[in-house]
Length: 263
Ligand code: SF4
Ligand code: SF4
Ligand code: SF4
Image (cartoon, rainbow, N blue to C red):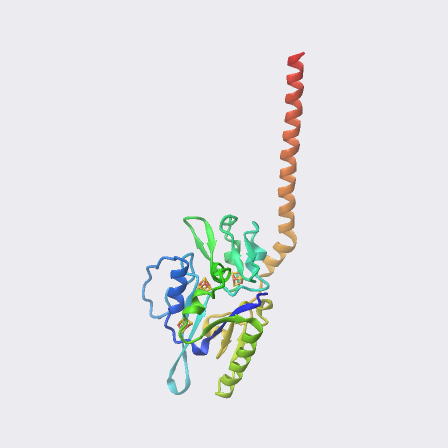
């Protein structure tokens, strides 16, 4: 688990989408053509070119009012990461900084990680046949910089820093929100999937922001990881062994033939 994390305080988000633009800019991701379908949430889903989206959710509030729920969404960089367990090619790894990243060179385009992720945040590039998602700006972290989304956020809704300090800050903020009448306020990402490096202060229930109430690694992924993935390695080793035996036997026969011809 990362010692540095991002804390996303949704109660401070004003929906400016600066984080969305900064993510596109830093990662050189092109814009996407979309259609207005009656919501400000745009683009409507994650893709190989959209690692970060801002949720714009409308819910009925008091006295017939509409309450807005806004939050930066993307890969959570889970401790119990379903994508890592699902990947048969070993292309998804945990960095020294604790982030979960995809090595596109090793990715074989099987799509297993895309379906396994309980947050549905992995995009798939059909042109290159590669899975892609938020990198936690690992290239920036490795150079002593904070993630682009945290750097640009004007309200400190996204803050990057020491995990322990940010958990303490999140607890204080939840207390403040509860005192202000937000009885469902909570920290999200402390216990979910054994903790996430993208941690949230939510002013209400997770589903109001489009987050799963109780995210889990799918059972099929656990079974695959525990039983079939090691077998897959055995199959690869068996095939390699077979090729080696075949090559050795072919060489022995060729050597014998050469010897006979020489005699
Ligand atoms: S949110 Fe999905 S893609 Fe990100 S680490 Fe967790 S399982 Fe993997
Ligand atoms: S950490 Fe970097 S890649 Fe991830 S959402 Fe923020 S800006 Fe995008
Ligand atoms: S930059 Fe900050 S305030 Fe603006 S949408 Fe992103 S998280 Fe919200």
